[in-house]
Length: 433
Ligand code: FNR
Image (cartoon, rainbow, N blue to C red; front, side, top):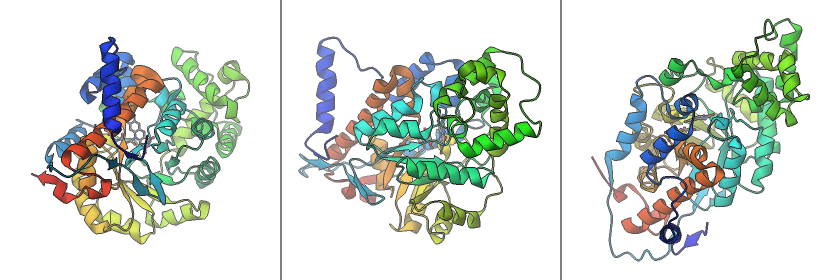
């Protein structure tokens, strides 16, 4: 995407309308609700439930959308917006737009190319991609597919510090520019849809590729097997077990656990033991503020805390020297009836007063939402579910279209609201209430 541009949005529009003349339609619906419906159609009930669902009665998900709906962009006229500059400064670099791709785990549920497809699309569009701790592909594979594309790594702080340190070291070696520590998921939320289906991808070996490709994790698994705590009695070969062995074997190019492919993966106790080890090690609900200091021993990369919703926590984070804050309620997947991320933003932005960048996600469904978040004090905005839906509906090309549409609508909203630069968007760009 061109940085200073005369009309990114216009070129996208004319491409779409021109193709329409010869009867072609976009690969994915532009309307976000239609996009979600298309993903529902394309996916199994389990996969869609996992991607789309939230915690409890999904009131937080609704609140996220309602928070955007309660703000109004206040357009201004006659301001010469012929040329716009969508770029921002973030973590010491100029970025072509204020968007980043939020970390999303288990993308193999959406498409077999999973994180690798996202990485390629993100690199092509110049949008930083935050690789998930629950990735379906090892971070090294995604990094290789991204070339020079900007990437960060999202860490779930597990119960093993050796493992945490290993993930962070690998992220640094993979060219990740920052570590995003997600702190709202030290336990898995009460996910109604998944519970009703009895479906948790990790128990099937899906979304644990960072673990199965890790040497420290492999050691933990071997120790478990040596203690006699393998997978228990050899399980019956069911379609679910086959899928999990396949999933582990697929990450096997880099896996110190399985080198003999699916057959070995099925016969060996290691894949089952890997899943059990993951389930043991994943949660770390005892973490407190002083623990953060250990991260600084493991890496010199900038550290961003994700899942901040309270201004006092933002203040603590600054006291602990973090480099950025990510305001998010995990898309309503963790606490039901929680505060909307956007509603939490103004008070936090006021407290932070520009000292560190603020990223916001949870409920962003287009370019106008991004304008609203920036006006309320965000530095950058995370796209979540929509890109996973694009991937589900039309693979890499579909997800590219989704991200492109966000960029184009943002460009257009800026222009039509009378803003030439992102810095020109501020509280006065909205009429609130
Ligand atoms: C997530 N999210 C997430 N966050 C994170 O830090 N690590 C992760 O592995 C995941 N995995 C994940 C899977 C799925 C299926 C979803 C939908 C979300 C949360 C994600 O980064 C982001 O905060 C939300 O997606 C934002 O909400 P919306 O805009 O998608 O509703």
